[in-house]
Length: 167
Length: 419
Image 1 (tube, rainbow over the protein chains, first blue to last red):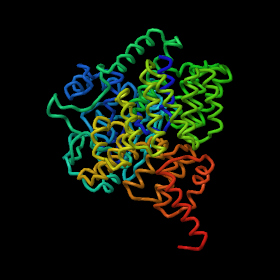
Image 2 (image 1 turned 135 degrees about the horizontal axis):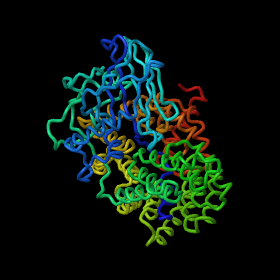
Image 3 (image 1 turned 90 degrees about the vertical axis):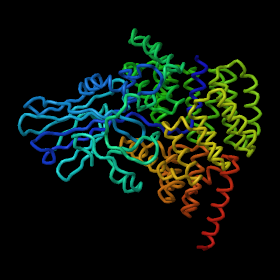
Image 4 (image 1 turned 90 degrees about the horizontal axis):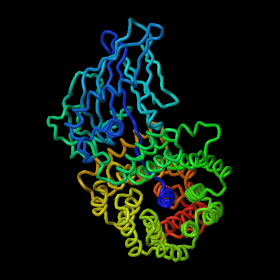
C-alpha cells in the first residue's frame, strides 16, 4: 500500500488539467426583479451531490433522471442549508424554492434549483454561502448578479463566503 | 441571459462558438460534452426517468469501494491521524488516476484539522504538499515539504515528492540530490527509478532506458501502480530517443497495468497525435471526456480529422477553460497554450501563455509548447530562455530539438538584419 502510494506521487509529476468543483449562482436583483424579490438559479454539479448524498441508488456509476428526481428534496434541503441571505439588522430574508430542473454545463450535468428571496422591506442584503466548503475547500461558488443593466460576478471560497447584494 | 426562474425556456440551436461564448461568459454553461451534437438546452425537466444524466464513480470500481470503507473508518474515528491520512491518500490517488480534482479537495478537507494545528505532523504536511503540487501551487508545496523534512529528515515520500517537483520545475541538480535521498530513505529501487527518470532530461536517455529496463525487470510482483509508472517512464524515454515502436509497446504495457489512468492515457494520446493517428485517440479516450486534459486531446484529434464535430469540441474546451479562469485557477498554462495555438490559431496568445507557464514549470512539454508558439508567432527572441535551458540541460528529443534549431536559425537571421 505504502509503495503504491509512492508510485502515485511520481506519476503525478507532470501537468494535469482537471476540473475542480464549481457551483453557479445566478441572481437577478433590484429593478430587474419585480417587486423587490431576488430571483435565483443555483446550478450544482450532480457529481458533487452524489458524493455527499449518494444519488446513485443502483450503484451502476450512471445517474439517471429517476435517481436524481427521487433525491431532489434531499438536494434542496442540503443546498439551502448552506445559503443565507440577511438584510442587516432587519434579520434574515426568506428563501423560497420555486422549481427544480436539470442544466448542462461544459464539465457535466447540474441540478438547477430555482428560488426567490424575500427580504423585509427595502434593505441592503448580504449573501452567505458555505456549500461543500467543509468537505472540499477547493469548491467555488461562482456568482453572477444581474441588477438593472449591470452584471457583477464574484467567486465565493472558504476565505470569502459573503457578498453584499446590490439594491 | 437566462436568469428568470420561470420554467423551461425554448431550446435553441448552437450558434457560432465565439458568439455563444460571449453570451456565456460569467456562466460558462454549455451542453455537456457527452450529449450528442447540436442543440444547446436551457434548463429542462427530463421526460423520462431512464434518461442518463451523469457518470459518477461506481461501486463496481474497487478503488471506489476502498474509498468508501476508508471514509467510513475515518468517520468513526475523526481524530485518528493514520485513518485520515489513509483516506486522504486514497482520494489524492484517485484524483490523479481519473483526472478529477474534486477528490484532491476532499483529501484536503480530511486532513484540514491537523493542518491547522501549531505543530502539524510530517505525514499531514506531505499529503497536503502533494495536493498543492497537483494544483501546481509549487512554491507552497515546497514550503510544506521543507517543513516535513525538518521534523522527519528520512521521510521517503517527502523526498520523492520534492524530486518530482524539482524535475517538473527543471532544477535538475536539486533533483539529483533528492533522488540520492530517496534511495536512502525509500529504498534502492525507488532511488534507481528516480535517478533514471532524471537522466532522461539530461542528455542521457540511453542510460536512463537501460536503468529503467533494469527497474522494470526487478518490479515483477510490485504493485501495479509502481510497474505502470516504470513502464510509462520507459515509453517517455523511448520517445526522447525517437524509438517509436519501443515507446508504443511500453505505453500499451503501462495501460495494461492501469487501464483507467488519466496520466498514462493522455501520454499515449499525445504519442498518437504526434504519429498522425488521431482516430485512435478518439477510441482510446472515448470514456474519459470528463478529464480536461483528455478532453483537449479529443478536441485536437477531431481537429486533425477535420470532423464535423471539431468546432463543437473546440467550443466546449474554450468554455471549460473559461470556467477554470472564473474560479481563479491558472495552472493550465501548458494545455491552454496548446489550445490557443492549435485550436484557436492564435500564436500570440499561445506564446503569452506558454511564457507564463515556463515561469512555473519546465518539463519537456512546457519547452515544446513555448517553442512552437514562438515559431508560429515568429518571435524567436521570446524563446531565448528555453533555448538556453535546452543547451544547458542537453535534453534529447526528436521533436523539440528541430524546433530549437529553427528558432536559432531565425534568431541568426534577425541578428543579420533579415526580415
